[in-house]
Amino acid sequence: MYTVQDAALITGLTEHAVRFYTDKGLVPSVQRNKNNIRLFDEESINWLYGVKCLKQTGLPIENIKTYVDLCLEGDSTVSQRFALMMEYREAALVQLEEAKRRVAHLEEKALQYQAILERRIPDTTNPAKWETNREDAGSCPASRLKNRSLPETEASVQCPAAALQEQIIIVT
Image (tube, rainbow, N blue to C red):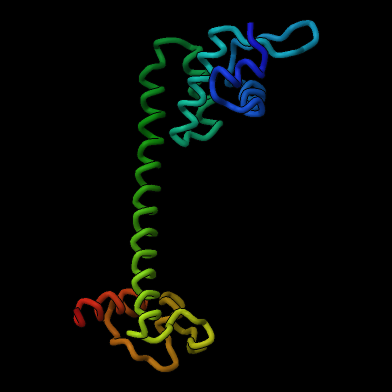
């Protein structure tokens, strides 16, 4: 039998994580001695490894608990466990696409700042230089410059970094 400290060392989890996972019911085989101290057998260590693996996928604790409960019901729940994984996979793919869009926008911003630093374009990132007309709440405020020096295009109305991208393509 292993203590919390032993289980943490074996699995690479922190002692806090081991306690947290057992308190959440994610380690159904954990036992307690007469002093209410958690004791882990080999099966408990396996559950901890399983939880660690699922946690690395980003699966929320509530979903891991559902997964554990399904495992306890037996092999008849394999299709339900598969469905749970595929559902979370789809959610993760949506998050990945959102992250790709954020990275692309940050790359455009990096180009914009580089051009500003190289004095190829004016600083359009400073809110003090933006017009106060807020009629078009959907557009990026930087597209409402007091002294517009970038060419206005459909893309630049949404974000001046897009206009910068177009200007760089034209210039280079």
